[in-house]
Image (cartoon, rainbow, N blue to C red):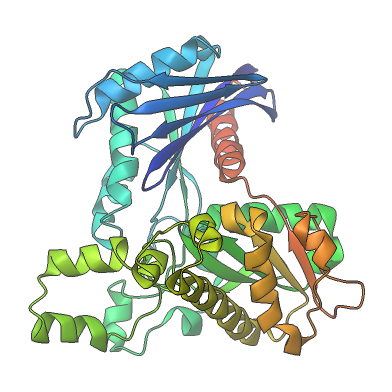
Length: 399
């Protein structure tokens, strides 16, 4: 059977769209689209093979997002055979303890995803409005959800617990972890290209605007830097990372911060932007001569290295370190600074390979293998959607 699978990967400033051609049990990537939410009017960037097109969207931005999705699908139809659209797969940030794997989106699943909004108030609504917009426009189209938290369900309770009263853990106050789709892809890719390393102790550094790290043992998630929310762990573009809980208490009690102002501070005005006072983008900071920019980069790299060492404790050592995502894949100076902090562990960087963004950047003398592997969350979403679609067809006797 053939058909088109569309994937939706919403972020804070963009919505990434992947288009895949189904050929029975396999998928061929046809192209991609990116909706830039920062542009006014919104802009749609389309890559269809060698063709690259930028389109200003005329649809008004509403809470429902129906008009934007309708126009986006119309524009994509001009470049891809969307008349054959068979299913849409969505990245959903939070699956809580309800979803440990991808799921078809029926009314019950949609309600369960909505009930998890309090656990991810800034991210979950983005996914929900995309699901509802597509359901409104094409009510009979199959939709599936892949969850960023699902990959981390293999972690032990001792890793997931906070040192809080036990009943709060039972109420869902625990470490969930995020970026699971990226880590799932890297675990699979590592098994393909370096099975010996994949069977060992690996820390993956997903470094982008949002950033976290994950400790893998034999390809299974055992610990991660992000916890209850996407604020935790290492500093990010505009998010603070791990923070003494006394700080927000002090800001509220002594400085009069309201809840909304505190949320804005921690999510949107901290991280690299807050430290530097200049930019949230590591490229800008690396290009700047300002002392504040250098300090932001140094703090970012030191905290990443510290987290790598901490995660290695959970898995009993470190055989390989993998850099991925926008910063991890493309910024040699960041990788160099991080690895420099880890020389005491026996990590020896090959500067030439690192500067070329080679797949292996550690020297032959290094006791730890350092790799750069491009992540592909859309591929994971598409693969999981296809698996669910095939299962549903078999249940209906179509397979």
